[in-house]
Length: 430
Ligand code: RM4
Ligand code: MN
Ligand code: MN
Image 1 (cartoon, rainbow, N blue to C red):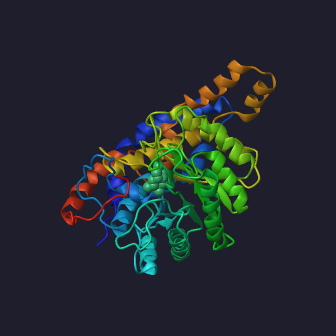
Image 2: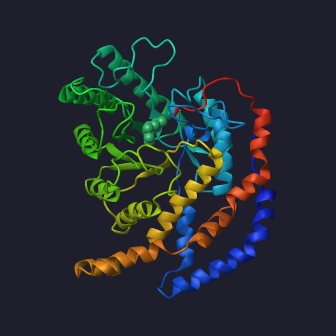
Image 3: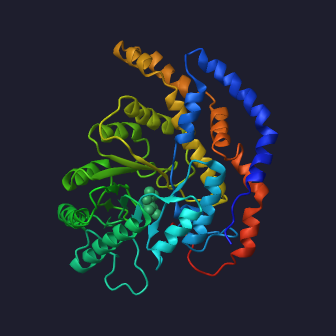
């Protein structure tokens, strides 16, 4: 039997808060009306906002040192979907799930699709995993996958990606995301150009298997597991590869995959300009690929990224329509709580960015009025749009306070009883 959040429980919790939320909403409505902004238009946009959840984010992550598993963790894709349904029932902006293969591989994809349909969930981008060997794997990925010096290893990695496309078709996905850890750990270990040539040759074979209505997203990452050089280490190599492959290939920006202090919003702008922005993996980071909860450290950076995205939407930029997804690793929190918080955090950045008066900003920019440009953005960022987010969830049938309502379901302790540890692997990010 699949667990669903009781609608009566959501209503009960919402009813106890609605009066306060309405008061705050009305106060914000008046404030926004002074700038000719209609709050209900913003709420409608917040209601339509969607961000996908990574299947692997529902398990507890870990580090190279240890993993401290939580209780009642999902043990397979069906249980991960059950967790995702809870997140979406409460948040009402996460109806898509992004799977990772072979972690989430099943024998019966039609059955998996039936399960997701029954939970009102659909499938986002398919992620292929060629950064580890599977039991009994004939040709190893130890020295890389798509760029390996061994043709047999490369062919295996290519055919896994082609399989991912086939599985994705059965699930109704339209995107394949390729991230590889290929690279080197020692100067001189790898011939940079030859390795990149091998990578491109492999990617061309994957691109050739892409249905015409699909996109291929390439994800860059500066380091780890390769600690000296990585084949697609930054957006430069990424966009070069995407351009080499063709219009269906685009770049994906994972916020934790850049050098510290890199201006990510400017990278986003460049990718938009050249029709190469495929999507995002949202998370936050202090040092590297920390995979911390979105907006937990750098909410202004997240807002500035959305400022670029909303600007592109406002200008109706040709070819613009990136996928939004979370990609986090939860070490000390209940993953469901982190994912709900993060979805709200990203949605908040989006709504705040909608508050920027684009024609006012443009005038300040043309007049080189730097302080007022900055204040225009800061004004939007500093607006507390919490009542809009709460109301959007309420109007969509979700929870005004997702975490409080989630805790009242006792879901985790129920799952602890129903999902005894079977000793299997939970999450790939360890
Ligand atoms: C990588 C990268 C990929 C994700 C894996 C699990 O660092 O972020 O998106 O698929 O981790
Ligand atoms: Mn990622
Ligand atoms: Mn990552």
